[in-house]
Image (cartoon, rainbow, N blue to C red; front, side):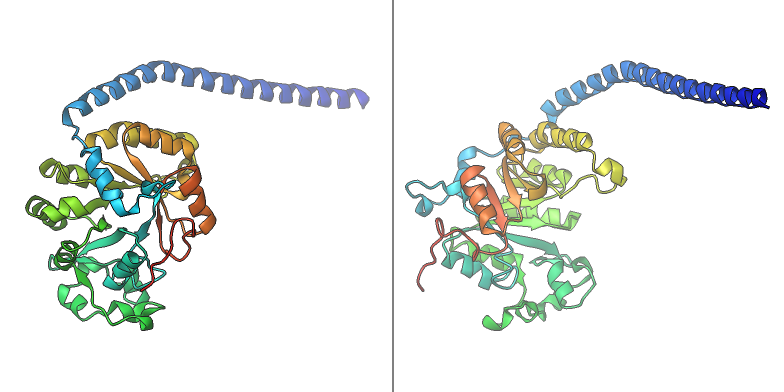
Length: 348
């Protein structure tokens, strides 16, 4: 009886040993296969990357002069002793927390607080008219239709102040058209960042046509979007146009979650954007989400001649950090949270 038990135990130990040996052999073979594949593929990948870098030299567009960018970002009346004008905020949608989004009321509120860098949303209607509008305003009005499916006649009747929490404090205001914005900019020194959330051929034609005919556009407007191809197509015909690339919070959202959170993949993608995409399309600014921004990322972008802008910063402590420590431009929804070190509201 004891002998049979000993035989069974020995048999089980032998099977366990054989199973572990098989697993180790499988792991070794898998690693050996990976090493062989890497030894073959890495040189070819390096060669392809090298050829892409060479080809990009022939198709890249020259970025606008740095003096032009400085003149748009920094105004002479902002220069003070001990302050850096380039670290002043960019107000998102004219200050969506302080006034109706993308409105002249918000525009004038920014001017009253001596802030002359404003980001506005550019959309296009179903009948091909460019307007200063964002889909979030429609959502507040319980309208789920995209802006591109609504005609201009709909927005002629749409009052943006009716759908803002502070709308009762402002005069009723209709949606601002692209043409009215250009006329408004002729009598001011404001720099407007036009962010196009939807890109189509009609919108690109409007931007190209306006940039070639209007001097106000190239001196007062910075065109921004998330499509490098759209920026490249516009700057081919309008090389003096200053453009900014909007980087989404994660460019790998379409990949599985375990790949989306890979630091290596995000680093590789960032390197491709900085060292290939940015020099080719000739952007001057890049918008980076605050969760994916740090001092090293800022240095890497500045090394390729592109100024980073962090979005969206609304906390006073965060603003002090970006103003005084990283010395980086940032996008904010409200001027009420600006540190008093920089902003001091004019008496009206």
